[in-house]
Image (cartoon, rainbow, N blue to C red):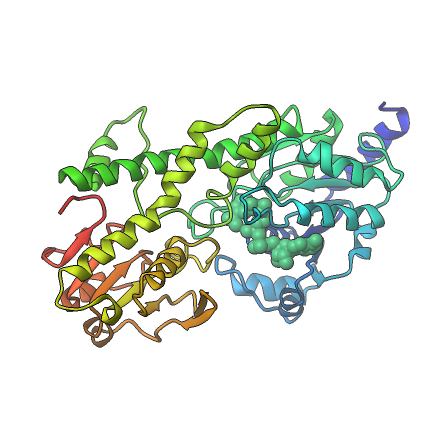
Length: 448
Ligand SMILES: NC(=O)c1ccc[n+]([C@@H]2O[C@H](COP(=O)([O-])OP(=O)(O)OC[C@H]3O[C@@H](n4cnc5c(N)ncnc54)[C@H](O)[C@@H]3O)[C@@H](O)[C@H]2O)c1
């Protein structure tokens, strides 16, 4: 029930927000949380960044940046000016008017949602909150998390949502590595528990985001985020399946997609690859599939798409084995150089990278002479062994390997040099498209 006091409370908070006279907390300082915290701190708004990872907290205390897309100087300036304060102490939540939760939402080994990080962050907020704060969950999750999981934890504080405090879900859309779209110029969706919750959460976002779109419930906002990511997953799966078919019948899928993309309406190009990775597109279909089961609903189409994408590293493994078989070497002696470990171009994010999966499968097959080069991933653990990136991508390094496998097309790679010096290049990203002599290049989805 909204009473006079709650209206006055929300007006007080909206008034403070309109004057930039607020203190903000961002819980979880990763790829999502740190850019958001920096946006507020850059506006001279006192911002606490809370993380349980002391390495991150201590780096930030020294003004050191660890997210590739963020300008180092912004971080050092925000810290030295005192507008960004990194801490692992949740007591600072009390001081804040606006609280964002940006913690991970992974899946378990059985691919079921793991919202334990959200639960833990909400419990910490609940133990330290006060009246007239707005709490905004930004972690991607299944519909109902805000109202069924987060709300009861927060109300255990004795405060009531919609009258004593404000609660909303607003999914993050940041696309690491994207030079054009960032935290501030990407429109954001906000769905609050009540109209007032939506209004307050939207106003808080408006301080740092150019366009805020409001929806009627947190569930709509939660579901629209899953739709965005599942839309990508199913379209990538479609083109991955077509790539395999094109391999079988000898048609170049890349040329097919480029040709289709000339249609000015009704088509959006997606490209095949060695599989999908990162913290979102791979995981999110499983969040929805899990939730759907509770309603006796099987998301066949969505799950099939996820399966097709997850099969791609296995398909690439077969491509490697086939190319080794054509050379006068045996598998255990073949030397494979993997180019790019990150899950996509120009990022330093290794989470669920298909390159990791391919490497693991090759090791399973007894292809033990594996090296990799990735300027953004200095080391990786594969099957409990630490591998270090080769220090440089040189002609000598390329000549020293039997197979060069391009899994991530970082823009710093010199693919011309690679193709000139390689015995065989297996290209899963069409990275060698501009190279004239393609005689030693085996391209995923061109059937040659
Ligand atoms: N990475 C992306 O591109 C992206 C884009 C859109 C949405 N998302 C979503 O945003 C959420 C966060 O993703 P991310 O990529 O920033 O993850 P991340 O792992 O980079 O960062 C999360 C941070 O939260 C911290 N953390 C974990 N539990 C905590 C707790 N209880 N209290 C305080 N800090 C805690 C971790 O130490 C970590 O630093 C996920 O739900 C993800 O699906 C991510």
